[in-house]
Structures are given as structure tokens and as C-alpha cells.
Length: 258
Image (cartoon, rainbow, N blue to C red; front, side, top):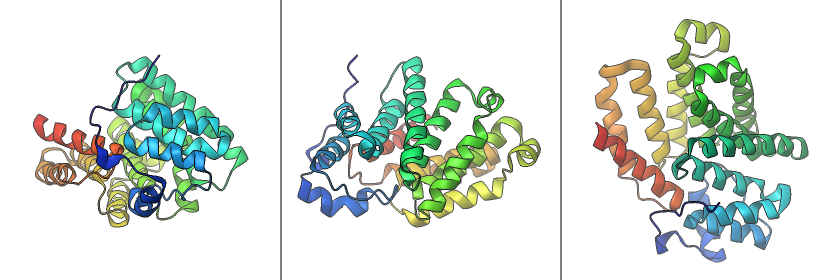
């Protein structure tokens, strides 16, 4: 089954090996991914940044464990933003999470193995409902993988976003008291994680969206003004690739819904 095409193709997102290397620090400030050594993986990342997610995932998987980071990022971004079928979406996140467990065994010091595990399980949990996911014992696995990512790559802004979302989702599902006692989550810790992410990656649109969502979830109406400001800032980010464009479009949709 062919993947849905990226709906905003733009020449600005099509990099060559040379321009990709130059843009790499800005493009990967969120995930601290090192520039690939193999030409095949450079091609996979070029496909990813251009929005050719299916091609990026295939090239990544063809390269074996070395290509898991790009394959998982492409699969997760595609499933999050472009896959219409909830069933397929959940299946993709499950698949990524399973592969990440193999990746962790083969490359335990690779932050991507832990981060994409946390991301995929987190999105899977949202897909089946957080309450069901908590009953399945997913929360400690997600938290462990986020903590591992941050231990391996303290400047991994996306992992700090994930940590903020983790605190928020659990408090939103079971309340602050049970969340604190059972899962060691705190509202203040969640907010702190989002602020850290914005410090590490000032250009993050998704960090602002998730932070805004968290403020509304945790504080309700009284934080609506602050949340709208964050959505506006996210919508104003100048996207450097297809993923950032999808984040920016998501922020614009949030503003239309307000």
C-alpha cells in the first residue's frame, strides 16, 4: 500500500549532500543526530527532509541498524501527520517500537534507539487511549526510554518535549495525585521540560505546539492566551524541511480552531 504523498512539496526542502551537511546542525538541533557516514544514508536523509517519507524509510531499513534512525523518524512523522487510517497508524508505531527494542540491544549508546522507542510508544498510547496504555504498563517503558535519551544526549530538545508531554498526558488522564504517586509526574516538571526544549531549540514549532497543548490541558482557560501566543509563534516559524512544514501547518490548524 503506497504511502500518502507529502502535500507541500517545495524545492527549498530538497538538499544535496553538500547543502545537507551545511544545514545539518540547524535541521538536527532537535534530535542531535550525527551526520551520516554512508552515502546511502545521506540519500535517505535527503529523501526525509524533502518529504519523501516512504523512500526515506525504505532506504533506512535497507541499510540495517545504521539506518534505523532515519527509517524510524520517517515512519513516525508519516504516521503522525499523513496516515489517515487509525489502524495503520497504530500498527506503524508498534512496528517502530519493536524495531527500537532490537536497536537498543545492538546500539545501546545510540540516543535514537531510545528516543524513537519513547515517541512510537507514546503515539501508540494516544492512539489506543492513555488510560488503556497505562493499564498495559506502557508508561514506565516510555519514561525509561525518554530518560535514557536525555542521559545519552542531554541537548536532545525533542526528548525534553517528550518528557513534558509525558507528565502532561498522565496528569490529564489520572489526575495530579495518582499521577504523582504512581508515575512520579508533576505539573511543574512538565513545564520545566518544555522550557528546556525551547532553550535548546529556539526554532522549534512542535515544541511550542506541545507546550501550548500542555498549558491548556494542565491549566485550562486561564492559560489560553499564553497558549495562543505559542501557537502563533509556531505558525510563524520558517520551515527548513518537510517535517517542520508539517509542524507549522499543524500550528495554523490549531489557530483556526481557536
